Image 1: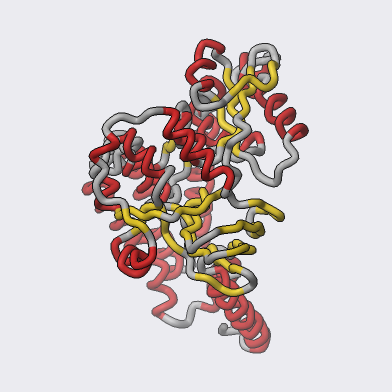
Image 2: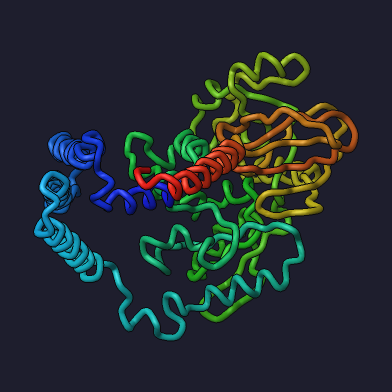
Length: 421
């Protein structure tokens, strides 16, 4: 609504007979000029290795031509300048459209061959899993996404319609990035690594903890490494094999022990994995509020070696206590869990301020647990938990849009009666 209103006002402004105000005349010169200077400063300050300075200089040049042309047009009202500006617009559209068309990444004929890339057997594997799996929610992973779709493969779950752990996004969930950084799976000093997240691909221990139930593999030689973590062959689809873990935890489970972030970060990778099966990681401020009636893990020196059996036994306990989903969609999750004592519930959903937690119909406090995930405190007995999601700033955006819509209609009303508006 706001953009449409600005475009409409800009369109009306090009009626030169309405330019009685000198401020209105000069603003069309000042705004493009300021933007041009900002682009010029950006060119000078940028140190990005792959920065396209040539395109940025062209943008600066076009903005400068527009500012000068508009200034001369509104000063002289000559049709020659109107034609000149129109010619510049056509030149800009033609030039940048040529770049977009000729320098884009396009598909070659090889990508459309049967059983290869976008037409390989992976979509069939995903569909087979969906037909056979009757649970409300299951995560699926592949042994190597890069085999399928090059750089875009990190969003393969979005493309093929399943829940995975990898992601490419210019603004990935910052809490998820912090968790991967705490496990040293990404380097936070490299901005690009916060965009290209491999998630838990090829890491069976993490895949179990975060509820990956199915893994689709194309390399039979790695089956044995997955069998150690109870991922067993389920369906053979020729060039692909589906592995299944019947003990995979659906979406979350409770903890009755806690550990601080500071203590957690002191551990090596293997010890961190084992601790995640026993204790929930909390910020110091939450530790002080919750620690009075829960067991705290401090010294982990006895965990220098990680027996797989101990790791799996801990997870089997969590599986028996896990959250049972009754309803599931992207913005609403409902389920129940029974606990013999007060515990902290962990959900394998990256924390976001848009989530709200309700326990037995009452609003509960949302917790940031395990560095980057959603959690809450549950009491003894059965807890019916509802997770509701509303995007942050949704209501502010809605109210702002309604106000702008009202202003827009008021403007239309008065502009019809006053030709100078």
